[in-house]
Length: 317
Image 1 (cartoon, one colour):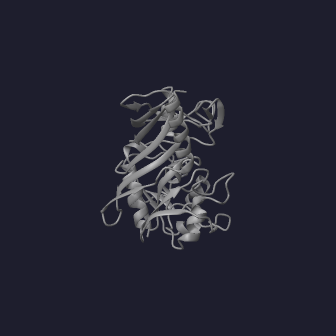
Image 2: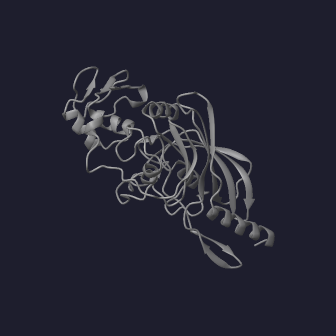
Image 3: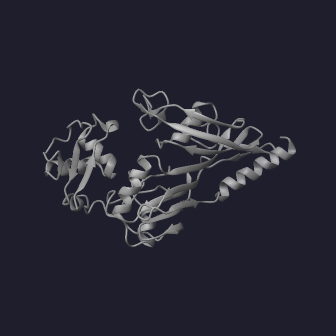
């Protein structure tokens, strides 16, 4: 079955190879190889990898591309790693990703990822999404815990990708941030690559995209606030960048934050990772249309930090 993508206004001007790399979650090198082999056409014509797309263009990926994308150098190795499955059927699976685990193999993390674990526990994965990340429709940072949904079927994959793109998937996070916040609020600041540090994101980038984050206070502590966060857009590091930009970075964030410890009885207690947890996802089943809701309870490390802050509140520290 060939794949067809219709270019929308938001993607106008993108290079063909970059557009498909983003859509299929496959390296640009693989896309460029497919273009060279004439397995990708635009409006039924072969174009160069640098072709600039126009709104309305029909990008057709020929069936043989699926075989090209699977190479011996890119094989997802099943590994017997415990993973918490929240929901599973023939089309998708929802898991609770622990902090410290990368979603799929990449530079610096060749194995021991969530997808290596999933390949062991679930034998039939989707074909689409790339050989190392089949069915991956969204991701969580390594040190962010919580709910993640993976497609197990190609039809489900495309439906879920479309749902995320149309902002039909509701995502709720729990975050512990520095300082005192009151009530609720909204952060509307564009996000893009930082000018001088390409691995960081920034609200002051020359090339940025719309980003909207809504929040409400759950509980105030001395020097910290526990907040419920809903992201309307899904930019890289969005929550971390947005809260840092308003002077309330996520506790434990080594990139966008401050000190990485809290105090109890004048003792410094280290915080090993950012206190950010993907608590809930709401979506419609990609095949049946049935409303689904998945929740991952707070992990033990966040609970322990909250207990310490409760003690500080009680003692007036």
